[in-house]
Image (cartoon, helix red, strand yellow):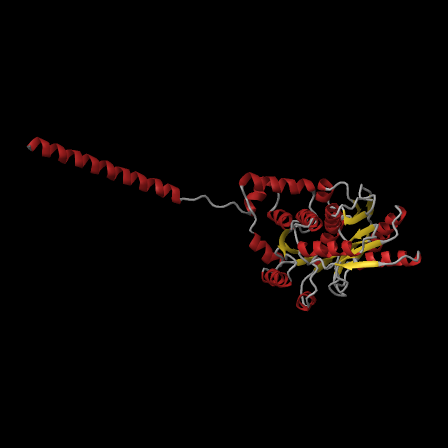
Length: 365
């Protein structure tokens, strides 16, 4: 019994001693861990790149002339030592956040989705980031986004929405930051970027006439909205009037749900059974019209010819047979970003309202 107790005592003592040594070892290890390496700074970047701290600062803040070779040296040094600029400090120094708010009506629309993608690309080329806001064609949501962007102190806003609520218009007119509109008039002092919309209407109407159409329906957006796109239906009216042909216009506000757009077009085709041509205000409306014609057994293009507007990449992939007037989407986005940067830098800036468009003839005409 004695030996058994003594053995247990020795065993416990060994375990306690081992545990104590283990704790001491852990403490020594934790002391080593607590000695953290100092974060690299601008001086470290300058040393590795072989340039002055001032040069590194100028590269980071994009100030003054710096050769591409020097820029590469600095960026390579940053990458090598794991240096990341303090964006908060940079924003305070330059009085900029390098964020641009972009408000679109619906990113599921191929045109606006492609515009947003291109804007993000061209902003990144200028070291800016995009805060994308999808209003879902809702005026209240758009207003909330405007407030949110102001609170986050973005450097400017690019807007391509179609809401006509008076509160929204007032919000934009009272903005104290650079504002660029795409396909929309938001005020006399707001820069607007758009394609040649009169040419859009001219090309579409003349193409349908050349294909033998005489009873042409023009589907357009809300005429109460002040926007360059109104010139499309004006061109249609002018040409039809010159030829002594009747003008027939169906207004479908852009903010309407798809189901309502479908019903309005369906009802119109049911009422006007002698239509032989349709000039749709965008490719989405043209696609809906094409689907309705198929369901009603209306042969396209033999009995009814359909032409849309936009020509976005996604539409061309999934519906290559659609005849459309292609907008220069990349150029629109590029001009919007350039105008925004010019406004931020207090440079002279003007509207761009006549960017060139092209006819893409498919199988629907």
